[in-house]
Length: 259
Image (cartoon, rainbow, N blue to C red; front, side):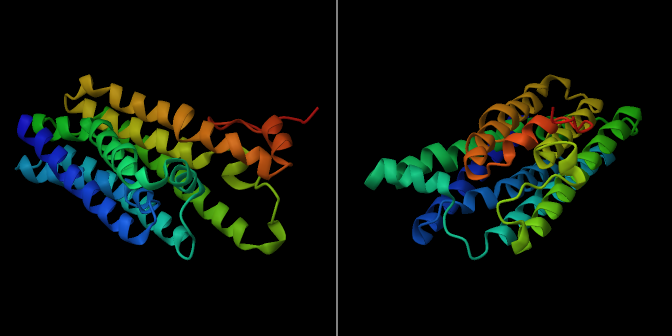
């Protein structure tokens, strides 16, 4: 167990430090967001490689993580093309001044590396335990939940990208497709993916890693997901207040009448 955990920690340290160096040269910290999903893919396959022979359950976990992580990273890279540094990091840069690069190393890159390592504990523990028991109902349920999450996340991102590409929609609020039932289908999708992966890992004996999907849920709801985005979006889009009254914030549900 220690070998897998320590190796992944060192790999993430090297990966995030390298990204920080690249970001310093580019003067763009936003690239760290594009590598968030890919970092989980690295952890999944390092864990699989270190614990051979890999069981069908571990290969299932690594495959699902790759599907989720690479789709997310490639989408964010595509979305970022031609855009400057994200406004969040620009605000940090202005606040910290000359100290920004060292502050960003610790509070952005290394912190994200630590979060990846912790959230990915179900993958790491499941690889080490390598339960040879055949795949069962919990694996099937977890896989289904992860795929539902992937559909919400990928579908929501695609619908939003298509909506934003139409100049006629400037200033409007997307309230169709997945966005008709939840204001954040991509974050809800992330939630489903990580609870689904945890279920598969738990089926292999990694029950004790439940704090990992809990932490991801807190991040999505209270810190870097819903709460952070909605803090500013209402100011940029006046119609958003009506959308809030009509549509669930996170868990999908039927639209409400705007009384």
